[in-house]
Image: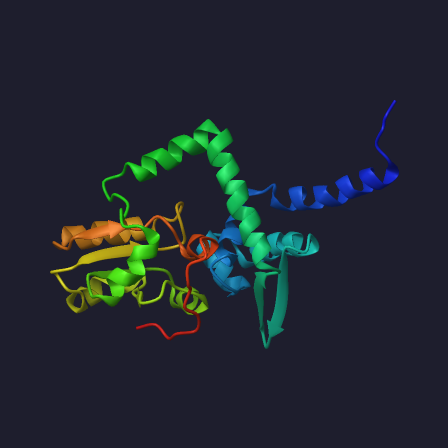
Length: 225
C-alpha cells in the first residue's frame, strides 16, 4: 500500500518539470552559456552551434520550467537565468556527474592532465598577484561575457583577437588565461597560442561562475580593455 499522498505526487510532478527541462545536452549547454551572462537568442545559437530556431525552441522549454527569463528589445530577444540559483544548480549537477559517472571523470582527468596545465596559484591569492603586477590574467571569452562579469583586473582579449594583440602582453610575467569554466576549451587554445609564441602561459580552470561561488569578487560592467 502506497504511503505517498496526492500532495507528494503533485510536488514530484513539479520537480520532474526541472528534470525534463535539463534532460537535453543542448539545453545544458545553453544554461552553461547563460551562467556567463545574458545573451540574445542569436548569440546563444552561434556559441552553441545551433540554428536560431532550434535554440529558441530549447530556450522556450527552459523558460517553461522557470529556469530562464526573456526580454524583447526591438527585434532581439535576450535571455538570462531567472536566478543565480539556476547556475548553482547547474554546477551541482556537473559536480555530481563528475563523481558518479566514470565517463565524465575520465574526460575531466584528460583535460587536467593536458599539456596546457592548470594555474596552480590559489584563487584568493590571484587577485593580489594581479595588483602587484606579478601575473597578467586574460579573459578570452567574447566581450559581452566579460562585461557581464569578470575576474577583477583581468584583461579582455577574446580568443579570436589574441594573435593580433600579442605585442601588448609582457614576456617577463606569467600569463593566466581563463574562459567559461572547466569544460571550456577557449583558454586551452589561448594557452597553446601563447606558448607557441614563447610566453609563459597557464590555464585557470575556474570561470566566473565558479569564482563567484567561492565568494570571490566579480567585476561587472567594465568595458573590455
